[in-house]
Length: 127
Image (cartoon, rainbow, N blue to C red; front, side, top):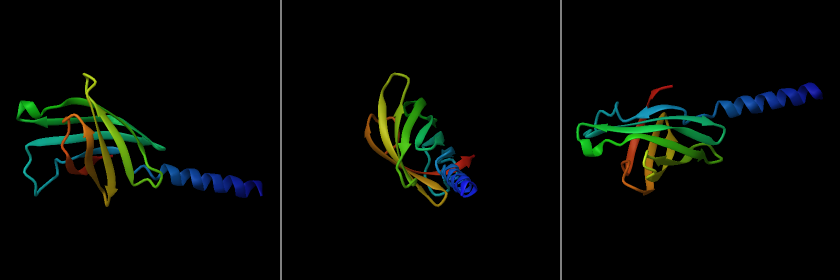
């Protein structure tokens, strides 16, 4: 019985580690069909239900550059949706929702300052 319980705990803990759908570096650099005025890159790590990382918008237009943004948030219980908050060095923040779909992230801005685009599809750049 003791061995069975240990095996069950091992399987459950292994399954929870494999559900880190949001970890990695995501961006719109690989977008073939879109007209790119800027490149949005977000690097995040998921630990259980918490998300931490950085984001940046780079562009040839100086007014679109954001600098480094701090990312924090949490993953909803089913693991396919996350609520994040992006904050710049001056403390100005914006909130967004990330939805994981078939190797891509859908980024939807929910409110706050105009630091980030309203909606964008992000592809995984690196692990």
